[in-house]
Structures are given as C-alpha cells and as structure tokens.
Amino acid sequence: MIQTVATQPFTDQKPGTSGLRKKVRVFQQPHYAENFVQSVFDSLDGYEGQTLVVGGDGRYLNREVIQTVLKMAAANGFGRVLVGKGGILSTPAASHLIRSSGAFGGLILSASHNPGGPDEDFGIKYNIGNGGPAPEKVTDAIAARSLAIDSYKLFDGPDVDIDAIGSSLLGGMTVEVVDPVAGYADLMASLFDFGAIRAMIAGGFTLAFDSMSAVTGPYAVEIFEGRLGAPAGTVMNGTPLPDFGHHHPDPNLVHAKILYDRMMAADAPDFGAASDGDGDRNLIIGRHCYVTPSDSLAVLAANAHLAPGYAAGLKGIARSMPTSGAADRVAEKLGLPLYETPTGWKFFGNLLDAGMATICGEESAGTGSDHVREKDGIWAVLLWLNILAVRQQSVATIMADHWTTYGRNYYARHDYEAIAKDKADALMAALRDKLDSLPGTTNSGGVVKSADDFAYTDPTDQSVSKNQGVRILFTDGSRVVFRLSGTGTEGATLRVYIERYVGPDGELGLETEVALAPLIAAAQEVADIAGYTGMDQPSVIT
Ligand code: G16
Image 1 (cartoon, rainbow, N blue to C red):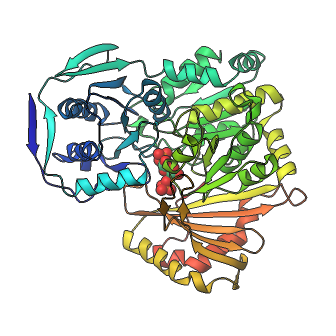
Image 2 (image 1 turned 30 degrees about the vertical axis):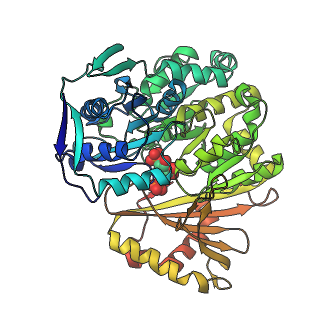
Image 3 (image 1 turned 90 degrees about the vertical axis):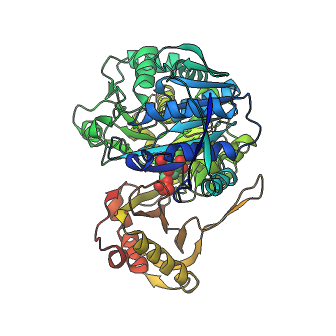
C-alpha cells in the first residue's frame, strides 16, 4: 500500500559540492531523509517504470536509508532498483552500474572522506543517467523543491533482504540485489594490462593499499590480491565498517599517516596507495616519494597511452581551477585541449559526454577518466601500476623524469577547518572587495598580475557558474587561490591553494614548504587569515 505522508520543508537541504552532507543526527530527524529523497524524485521527469541504482559506502545509517529509498522508489513508480549486496557500492562502481544497466539515475549514500558513526557524517547524492553527479540545474531544482515540499510517498511493506543476491518484488517494483564488485573489476580488467601488472608483482614488486576500513576493501581484495596476485595482506583495513574503525577515511598525509610512514621506512614497499570512504579519491606514494594529486594527474595524462584502454591517446584533459597547472604543461606538449572547471566532479560530466576530455583530475585527490562519470580511486592506482609495469622504473624516477621534462609545480593546500561561518564569509567578502585594487601591488609573493573571482562557462551548454574561488596571480606564474569548501558539515572550511612553477632548468628538488614560503606569507598578508579565523596555523596541509 502506498502512503502519502505529510511533512514540512527543512531549510538546509541545498546540495553542496557533492550532494547533501550533514551530521547523522540531522539525517535522523523524522522526515529528513525522506524529504530530500522525495525532493530529488520531484525534480525529475520520466522515471516511471525505469531503473534506479542505490548503494553506499557502508557508513552508519547506510542500511536504514537504503530501505527508505527502496520503499520511496516503489511508491513513486520506479520499475526496478538495483542495490549493491549489503548496501555496498563504491561511488565509481555505482557510476558504472548506472551506465551499464541503462538506469535512469542513482542515489549514492556517502559523505565521502568525512568520518562515519552516530556522531559523524552522512550524505545522499543523486547521479543522472550518464552515471555522473547531477549538474547544477538539477541540484538547484532539488534545493528549490526541498523548500516547498509538503508530503512524500512511501510504500508500506517489509524491509527488503539486501544481503542475498537475487530479485524480489516490493509492491510493483523489482528489487535486484547485485554483486557490487564483479562488474567493476571486469571494467578495470578491460582498461589495463592485468597480465603485465601481475607479472610485475610476481617478479617481486611490492605494494600496500589502505582501504581505510571503507568501501574499497572488497574491490581492492578482489582486484589486487585476487586478480593481480598480490599477497594476502596487501590490502590494509579491507573490511568496510560503519564508523571506519573510528578513523577519518580521507587519504591524505594526515589521515593516512600509517601508510605514509610505512612508505618512508627503509624497508618500504615499492608502491603505496589509499582510497577514501566511498572509493573515488586516491593517494599515491612511491617508495620514499609522495606524489601530489596535481602531479599524479599530470603523470597519468602524460603516460596513459601505455595502458591498453588509452593506447589511442587522449581527447583532452580537464582539471578543476584550484588544481595545479602541471597537467596544462602535459596538454600543451601533447597538443591537447585543457579545460579548467570549478571544483566539483559534476563539472567534468559534460566534457566527458561530449568526448572533449578523456582524463580529469582535482587537487582533492581525485582522478578519473571517461570510463565512468565519477573520479575513481582504484582506477588511478591501476593506471599507475600499468605505467610502472611498462616503464619498469620506480615512482621516484618517473617523478624526477617528469619534472625535468615539464618543470615542477610546487603545490600545497592549507585548510582552516571548523571556523565560524560568518567569519569565513567576511574574509571572502573582504578579499572580493580588494580584487580590483590588487593588480600591480607587491607583497611577499611578488608582484600581483591579476586578481579575480573564478567564473566558468561550460563549453557544451554555455551554462555559467560564478563565484568559484578568488585567484591571485603573480607575474612569475605563481598563484594563491582562496575558496570555501562545499563539503564540510561543521562551520566553514577555508581552503588556500598555493602554487609556484619552476621550469625544467630551475630548482626542482626543494622542500615544498621552502619553495612556497613567500606565497604562504602573501596569503596571510592579503587575506588576514589569522585575523579573521583566530588560527595561526592551518588544521590540515595536503
Ligand atoms: C567532492 C567533489 C570534488 C571536490 C571535493 C572537495 O569530493 O566531488 O569534486 O573537489 O568534494 O570539495 P570542497 O573543496 O568543496 O570541499 P568527494 O570525494 O568529497 O565526493
């Protein structure tokens, strides 16, 4: 029986950079998740009888919200829902399942790299039929609907068993519980030379992959240990846990410190990597050699042709604006177009659909390609492994070679977390007020060439996205970028992105902090970060 439940709008359901992310306790309010899911359905046209994909990263509340989604999908007229066994689907696997099943769209339940548990974070994101995050026109419609909603529809039936593969009926809707891993692993095998990687591992190459007790565990065990023959134990923290074992599943140098320390030890493996809560981010560390996400994008783009799936070359490269310009130099050399988009994977979807870009990447540890419409952590690791297997060189050698060919973009991101929202807004407003007066002035970073607030016009549909981050560009090509995160759930997070380019003949071996020190000082001078936030150090440096 279909129930229509009366409700009232919540005023805080506007999706951020990547869906709606809130504290679990916010999602546990009566009607909260239901309102958002109904707002999604109400913003879509033509899904009756169609297929919806549902799954998540296994975090606290995942299973409960999956049942809610199933009952609401049945009541709203979907014909079929595909759900990952146990409610598990990594974000890239969900994207692949949406595409390969011809689904109308999907709901991915995750707060990505944010921690999980009763006092931590949860999230819901809607992806469209191309497998990618809903574009802004859809998320704007969802936000508008969430402010007007007065009822939602729920099928009044028992919970569905999501732990056994197979089909069942919920009202008139079919629920198919599917293997979350196999189809994704097959896709990876179709893109990369698994034989070459397997031979490299059999020949003594060692790797460590930290799943951070999050969703990639089953995928990594199947692919690295199963199909590629790495020894058992190669995958660390390989069981997805609702609270990620009390860890913060963010693959950066702070939260993946155990892996980092292992990679810097005398007996380090040849290659180390980690992924995040929902499996779309990646951290790459060679033996004694950390690779920044921006550099990783550049190296992957420069060498992708060594993997079978990309042997025909790339159509273009896309990066988010705050990502370093390292990939730009590769694009230039390869004669490829380079697209600079706002932060958020959703901005890459149109470029990938239009065949304008093949590889995309972001400074926030995301890289991916046109094989799905999300960034993909395990994909990035496999492309690295394929390149290492072909080149038969260490990560450190490949990085050194890359810099002597293209020059080096020294890069760091400083995050100031959990600052009061009004203070963060005031800091950004003051910066915006200064933009016109900055060009021509000198500070610790050098002479300011230009200063603006990044705006993007999508080349495929001409849609315009404004206020995407304040950029201060210096005459020597260095830059400092300021923006507020769109994924946090507590106060505001200020992100300061700092970059300095040194050509192939310049000093390529500096410590990053040393290379960037004048620009870090300039960021303080221009934005008065300490004054506005009361913090004299960032919370996280990546
Ligand atoms: C999401 C988006 C990314 C973005 C990142 C950080 O990643 O998909 O495109 O770069 O958030 O965004 P912000 O700087 O606004 O916090 P994820 O892995 O959290 O889904």
